[in-house]
Length: 422
Image (tube, rainbow, N blue to C red; front, top):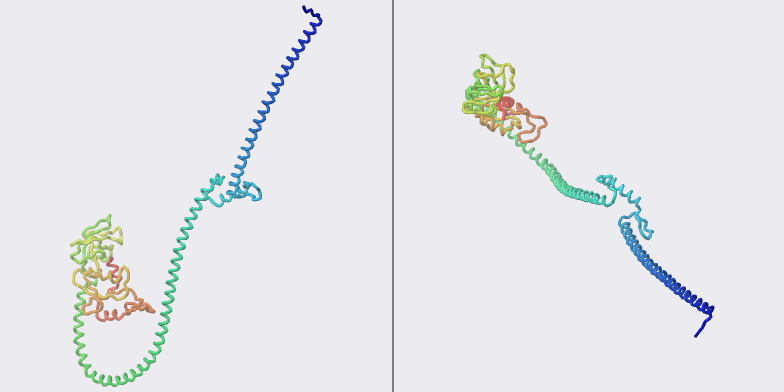
């Protein structure tokens, strides 16, 4: 039997309690240490993960910065306006804006709303293409003008060459003319001697012709009688040129609104379109011209005329009025010769057509059966086409004087213009 002292048991119990307390404290401290260690390890892992994330972000930022720097470099290099001394080129925005404003001022098609190169470049491209087309057009025109200039220069050189050849030929002709003049002088001296001989011969012929003069006078008297008979016959054939007492025709009907009328002569009377008549009142003794009538349409027995130049609107043309044309003749054939200058619309070709329609045959020169001479304007060239120093009036031409001597009726062109129109 083991008997213990109560105090000793108490000490044992106290020691046991202390051991348990220490054990519990140790366990608590262990768990505290374990918790602190766990907490420290978790924070280290988090710090390490954050460091990794930060490093990845920094690398991504470096990559983006490098890419952005490369993009900025490419943009600045393509755009310009940068300082090449900087490692990374940066475009000067102020210079870019100023240059864009200059472009707006240069290209008038750009509006004020154009604020970027992206918007400006298409307009610049269009303007450049338009300017290129314009330059191409101007280039083609320049090439054409250059070709024309070369052609003109070639023609000018050819003309100068031809002129030089002509001058050389003329100089040769002048030299030949001088030689010919000397030869001509010698020939003329020989001709003078021959003429003197002819003079002696002519003296003998004159004496012989004096005997023949009487015979010629008798022959001339016979021709004079023949000429007087022909003159009387021509006077009868051209009596129509003197204003006859009887009218050429009469007005049948009048249209006042249309200024048109009908007369009683037509194609069977050799009437042609364009013939003009004086209209005189049908009252006996009337001679004043009331109006003019121009033939506009011809039928077999009547003709349509246009009324113009009415003298008195209160005295209009009425049926029964008479029409006169001193050059109009519905009967015999006649022959005429032209003298002087005739120009459009009364040139020789159209006059010939008009005269043929009137039954008048045009001759090249005066003949025995010529009825009259139609006189035109004054001439500026002779019969061979050489220019005259002063205009030649037809009345000064030999054919005019010959017509007067033969008794041929002379008709001025103004009479044809008054009574006939083409």
